[in-house]
Length: 272
Ligand SMILES: C[S@@+](CC[C@H](N)C(=O)[O-])C[C@H]1O[C@@H](n2cnc3c(N)ncnc32)[C@H](O)[C@@H]1O
Image (cartoon, rainbow, N blue to C red; front, side, top):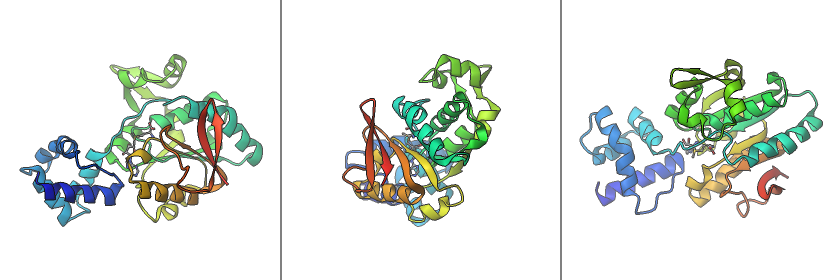
């Protein structure tokens, strides 16, 4: 890949998915995009760059975004957001809103473990499924298809999932673990790019949200894009809604609209 092609690809990724790559990441582009050469019958990475440049809405361009997204996740990742949700946020929302369903959005859900963890948490609390409106979205269509199928490998269910949840909410079929159909029906999966100014409009059919999980995705964005995404999320939320970001991410210093809460020494956020 020539220097100019690298710059073109970085520009494309920044504009289309907010991904900020430093100048030393050419190897990442090469390794992630190599599998697309065969699929699209192209001869080298330079041809992929050119094709994306010619048509940013082509199937190839979407495959590039997919390939460049990092879908690393696990059930009950970092524990504390889920414990805070169960012990503090959910009871506060129920007290405030009574019998109205609570709208929760997993805004970069990857292969679905975050959303299914939330569904399990609510089931465990004895809450009726209809009291939760749970939307899970991602940029990656491949990750979403995996999430929708709700079928996980041994390694995936051994990462973060308590044993009792595994036996209660999964059935083993051969080497795969299928998620319980009730749990599956509690989550609505949809495609959504956080890098779009029309986010609030496109989410209006699902929200406004009482809680947003937007975890371990802001770190990939350029700083100015991070602020825009946080602002867009705020527009999709109810006043005083709650936001969970990754431990290394925070809206602090980006906007003044959020109040920090501490739970077990970790922060989550509430819209002021
Ligand atoms: C590391 S995973 C985080 C998954 C989960 N939230 C967690 O914390 O375990 C990041 C996800 O963000 C998604 N993503 C990247 N850029 C995005 C964008 N512009 N809009 C929506 N999702 C995006 C990726 O496809 C990926 O699935």
